[in-house]
Length: 293
Image (tube, rainbow, N blue to C red):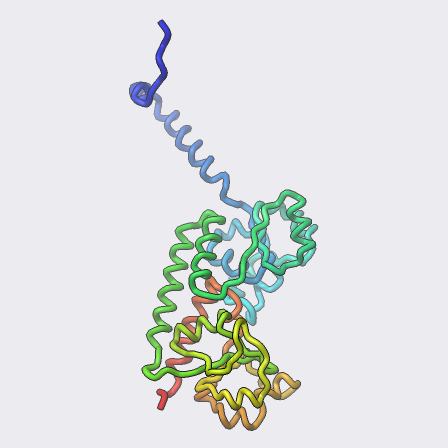
């Protein structure tokens, strides 16, 4: 007689008779298969990826970070990043680390990227973040790639909580605001800085630059007259033309300290932990301003 096909119920008596050691072997085998895709040696060539990796990965997973990772002027995780190896920009040095996952940015050294990909390394691009939704998606994606989905979910929760704290600072009376860098470059509505301002209920004045932004002459700034001026990394001395833009007597008179807020660059470049810190920084800064009249 030809035996029929074995179905699931036929396994039950057999599995009940398996020694416990075989159950353990099966369980460990399944676990090993699940862990096989989790990267063991992660490298980041990108400032924003640096911060996500430091926030989400196990320390043992991090094989190297970009040269900017420990720069406190650019990264909100600079202190934590100092414990890890910093890379140079040469692909050869990275290949020697034998990474199984390499993060790069959209504009990071295309030749290096091609060399790494040609070596069979897994290279993942970390896109620019310009709004809250893309920041959330990026956290989830990077966390999943690192095998740290739960940490990703917690970081998204922290991001939403920080956004809510800033939104609670909204003025009853709508105010206008601009984020201006040295020399007059002004952030536009498509920038990450604009997301911060919009969360706080601040809007650009009519006539402000569109898109990601653009340069405006001093005379136009004085004509636009936003209620609040956010100054990116404000200069302390008039050492060059870019600094003179903010040191002009007309700007000083129109924007005394109570109408001017310093905005460090590290809060306007990346999502992830940088955006969490940016929301909290701005909430604190607006909380210390006198009420609008």
